[in-house]
Length: 187
Image (tube, rainbow, N blue to C red; front, side):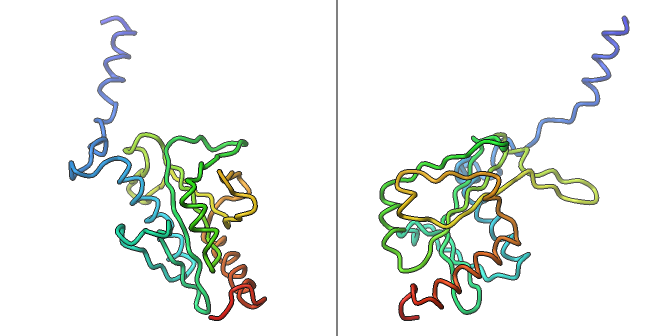
């Protein structure tokens, strides 16, 4: 066997088998549904890490375009979570197009609303890498407070909007300040 043919045969023998995660274990679960569940679960893990209460609306109760309420003790934050495999993370900007109904609902809320954009690889099987001693999520999230004066049709996220467990402390402080300054009305 020529050296190039042998190299190719060795390379084929060492390639990992295709991931079973390419298709859902439950065939009724769409990839879009998987992204939605993963985005909420990712935020839930950050909240657990920061010690923040997490209350998820059931899918049928998402009538206000709010997926989650983060419970900080004295006050709460309402959050809409979007998950995508479309954007590449780099020095650029990820733009989330806002539906007019979302903007209307968030603008009329008495509470500050935060929007979270979770970025996963486009291939579902590449989201999580389970290793013998660790589990690596190939995920990054961005989040910021919705501002009805600025976010009329889209929200732009940059590296400065990266969401970590530490970010939730900043959100807590913003929420407390919002209520302490009388912007939150009666509690």
